[in-house]
Amino acid sequence: MQITNNSAHHLFISDAVGLASIFPLLKQTLAVSAGAHVSLLYSSAQGDFHFKKELVILQSRYATQLFVYYISGSDTEPGVDLQKEIEAAINANTKPCMEFTISGNKFFTGRVEVILRFLGIQNYRLQEQYFKE
Image 1: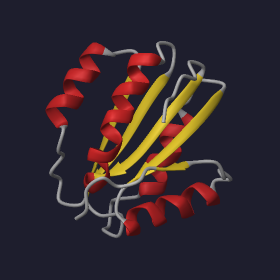
Image 2: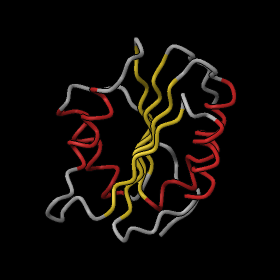
Image 3: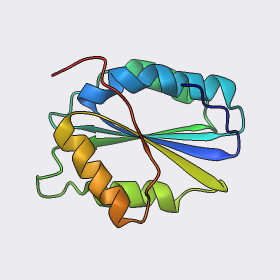
């Protein structure tokens, strides 16, 4: 799948399981969409953020383009509100359109789909998982 919409804000929403499947797409989006904004909401129930070194490198290279939000803890735990994190990323958008990609285990992707539909967002992409838990 190729992304070339430079006027979009690409919002990737992933858990630890799903990041391996969307990481190549995230890099490709940064490489071919010079004017686009790319945000990653990265949720990890245990707080172990794989690819963190790689994301830090990408953030320094694409400082005005890439925004990474680390969410530690399960959405079912007190103090963790995935919907508020998604809303904050949407509300901070300055581009004319947004594109959404979800990647993760079935519980996580189902939860994100419910939140997006609640927010009136019907068009989003579910990334197939290359790796399983």
